[in-house]
Length: 383
Length: 136
Image (cartoon, rainbow over the protein chains, first blue to last red):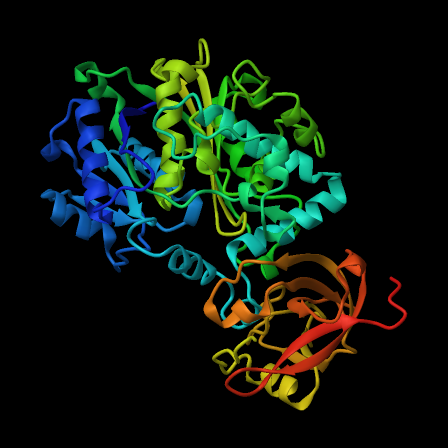
């Protein structure tokens, strides 16, 4: 879909942002993305927002547009959990390609750390469990992924050390990123000794809870001549949706990212071997390991050992989550997935500073929502 | 302790079964498809002919997790507790709590049997515990 390009991308600070609000984070990210694109707010004719736990509303995109002071001809909120950010980019590209919009702003943000208690965030997230057949048994998001992890370990020989290796790899990336929320050194031994959350998942197997926002502008390709920042091409995209709840999962070892990524690579005319840098949803360490194998970057059971050998690091076979990911950069709801998109744009523009993947020309971005339920993949390229 | 969920017309028979000490599931009278959770239609052939059938209540642990961090205050006194996905012998999968299993005996493939636990607010929740001769 080469007639849709990313012209602007930005994120706010992440972490504990005292006094921030869901809407202020949206506006800060949106303004920065507009400046990056060299556009005025009035140039935006399409807006895609996500959802908020701290300031929930039936019509979040309308709430944002009113607050930001814009009146776009197209506006909608998209809710696909961790797949939302990628899904908004996919939808923005489709809107631009169809000629419905010229410049679509995709913007997410939430203040999950200061806007609600940690207990409140955990409880709100547990409500994705089935109301009659999961929640009465004390399900939480970590518990749902604990079930996935236990089965995946059983079938494919994944070990606690492999999981910890993923956490350590993300921390190594985050330590090169001054914006990352979690930058303290983390050893394999420390990660493996973290307190149990939902066995086999321990503290460092779980993503952070953060305040933050992120925004991306998707524009028609014939508008890029006037843009100040190097554009990034949207080469391919795809989605797959297989279930919502754990009790509805077809299997606990094969996921819709296989189909969504295959669609995206086919549209781009590329394969996983062409990817220079990957930004893949890492809500838990097992999420990333399973997705790396389902997408086909590694054979089943081989991602864990590869991670311990440095596969995901700069200079590894697949530099992945170079900003630090949800595990160490930050996770503020739908914006968490948008951080992956923003990082891919920075890598393709050569703006990733101390964590730059040399000569990165093709990036793969993936988000998954629910319990590996909704999947959206993007293939982006240096324009 | 789990709370009795809000019951709907599609699930009332299931929860009444729990209160009566019977684990029910649905089997399509048109195509034979076994399904859970209960619905008014069959997800395979789309007929409106799912029938309620009692389960023997025996099954095999497909996966499990030991929860150390409660999602809500209602579960704070229960940690650590085991959530298991159980494949019942009739061919349906449920999420339940696995009770009475020493940590060292927890394993995928464990044979379990259903029992019913009083729920906060009335009614009963289906749960499982290891079968005596727990071999799969």
